[in-house]
Length: 258
Length: 317
Ligand SMILES: Cc1cc2nc3c(=O)[nH]c(=O)nc-3n(C[C@H](O)[C@H](O)[C@H](O)COP(=O)(O)OP(=O)(O)OC[C@H]3O[C@@H](n4cnc5c(N)ncnc54)[C@H](O)[C@@H]3O)c2cc1C
Ligand SMILES: Nc1ncnc2c1ncn2[C@@H]1O[C@H](COP(=O)(O)O)[C@@H](O)[C@H]1O
Image 1 (cartoon, each protein chain N blue to C red):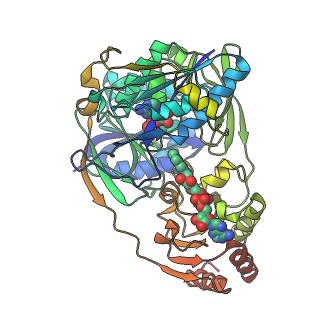
Image 2 (cartoon, each protein chain N blue to C red):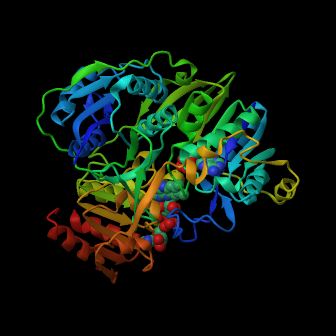
Image 3 (cartoon, rainbow over the protein chains, first blue to last red):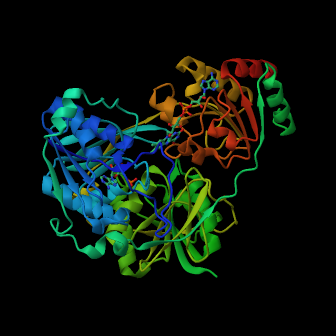
């Protein structure tokens, strides 16, 4: 079983985000790190490869040649990585991203593709299903758990009210819900080993993708306005001196809910 | 100014139309001359009445999918209808599990982008999305692509019945979907829940990591019960396994808009704020005076939940 995991490399979410003045899109400069959301997919893939036998390959797209986040996931235990990097990718939208990732994933010929349900910085949540459709594969989104059973996967798919048991033949795409496994920390040995693991860089031309599908040109959506939302009127903040609960009761009375 | 036609994704459970779908209808009516709905399921005739009351004139139904997840069959059926000349100007989906999936597959079939996380739509189909925890509003237009596909966040618009007659049911044909529809639901598991539903409750009491340990979530449930409300949670304690995912409020959880939201031991991360910032009144209890939750609170209590909550519960009993 060959499992490919899509991992996005993003600006550190701990730092405040900002928009580029000219393009009005999220600034993605400087060092990028492994999106936490994808760490769950990596962990899930490693566990599946351990139990069913197989290897884990990572696939990532970034315009600037970033490999930092990929090295983190390699240090967790993935065997190899493919990075699609090309200056022409600057400004690519979700559909363009899916086209690039699908083309790169094809070169790896996996039996199973894992993604997160949504990225931390873009959170469109559309890329996984778009990849599946581009590959003409079946898919299951919002997996809480995955087990491999011969040539199919059994997935517990989160729903509004609980979960559904879903069966799907491989090859397929499965998106993994955050928080469902405990991503391992890379060990020192893992970090050292990651430095020499194969990391293949591909350009748009290597993948045979038409430049009109990606980048600013390919993105058929345009941000026409960015404005600050008027802040909510500041409320009253008090420090509890042992009687703050009375304040809350008064507030609830004023709102006529008690 | 209106556009000729908008389609909305109608979702239902137990033959009742989901609130999000009715919200989409309300907005679509404002924007278009004709509003039509589409869905999959075996309940077309029942939900056509409710959809009609909310302004849909037609319900395009792909019928029961025999357990297949909807994304591939429904997207294929929509693409077929569009290529045979039915094309609407815009298609609105709710940001739900299935809505997101169908919209994504459809976007590939039609080769048009999807604009996501929409909270407002202008007459010219410019979509508004709030980013950075709702502090910045971004307006996006789709260029050179039709129909325009939008994923709309729940609670963005108010559902409104206009008393229309039942929508006419027509058949959507998916033709041969092949292997893409091979994912099948074998079994469904529903959690029992009592009291009002989290996303419909007038009062929501939510707990976060500040509660310290799973057992203390009982304080939150207790307070919610006394107030006749629902109990919510931050993702931190859902991930930690203290409470089931169905309690999660936020970007990847439920969007709530109650009259009163009480946040207990929740820091107020941007992803939590987007799920509750539109609540009419917000009360926050947090021991850190600098916690971001206080920036949206109408009443902020800098204090320990373990001391404030028991006293509050006692006083309300
Ligand atoms: C892609 C993505 C999606 C996400 N989606 C969601 C989502 O849908 N919903 C969501 O909630 N989060 C979501 N998150 C996570 C979010 O970023 C935060 O990590 C999470 O909301 C933090 O939860 P918390 O406030 O309970 O915990 P913390 O941030 O750890 O805050 C705990 C708070 O409790 C206070 N506290 C501690 N002890 C006490 C005490 N005794 N009395 C009173 N106060 C106390 C502390 O001062 C602190 O402010 C998402 C993150 C990502 C990356
Ligand atoms: N540039 C990228 N490189 C690798 N994977 C990605 C990229 N963009 C999106 N993905 C995958 O698709 C998921 C959903 O992303 P999004 O649609 O942006 O919310 C992410 O969590 C990743 O698993």
